[in-house]
Length: 124
Image 1 (cartoon, rainbow, N blue to C red):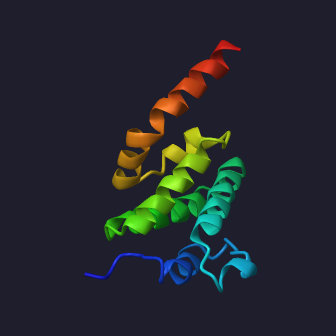
Image 2 (cartoon, rainbow, N blue to C red):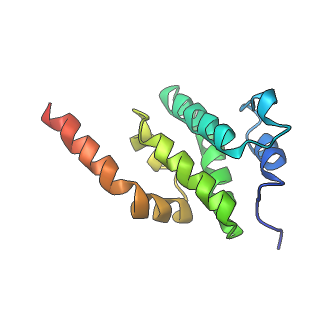
């Protein structure tokens, strides 16, 4: 079994998993994971807007694999990514591509906020 994705392999793994996603070159030397993952979340939101489901699936597969190794840094990054999805108008479409671990994290921390926003939007 391969090692999970961690802080040291994040950039390499992400670049090979989602070739259409371009990491800001200024963030690579210092391995600025939180800035990178927030950009990834916005990129995935854009892909949902464009109905690029194949690219969106690659992104969700990457997030799911990021959780597989049990690395706390990667879990925090995925959590951050999911939090950024809350501000995406297309999160409903994105959720369809969640893997089991991603869905569990979403349900644990984000779903209540998401459901409240959906209700609030429907009231207006």
